Length: 116
Image (spheres, rainbow, N blue to C red):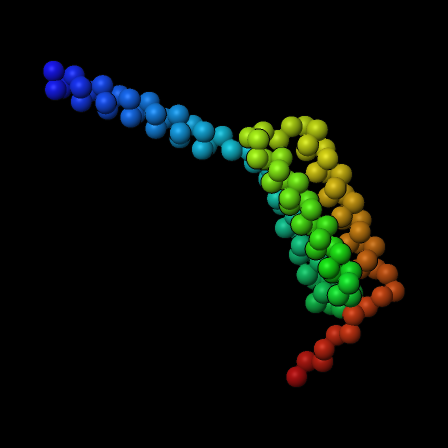
């Protein structure tokens, strides 16, 4: 009788842990979105380092990147990123990319500190 109870308890725990494991491994991923976010942040950082972006432009571009990251997190929260959500993220990133290019190549520049 004791072995039967132990077996039943073990089987119950095994089934319960499989369900939790399966849920943890099915979290949605958006590798293209994540890669573009990282690339665009590098472009912004390069613009700051070279003086092509002013503090105001940088702040605006960083806020835009934060909105994209927030939308991405919200889309992932329900467990599935739909095709419509991916298209929206792609459009947002396209706009951000164009804004980065436009701001880096306009006439405004930030003063670059002299190297000591």
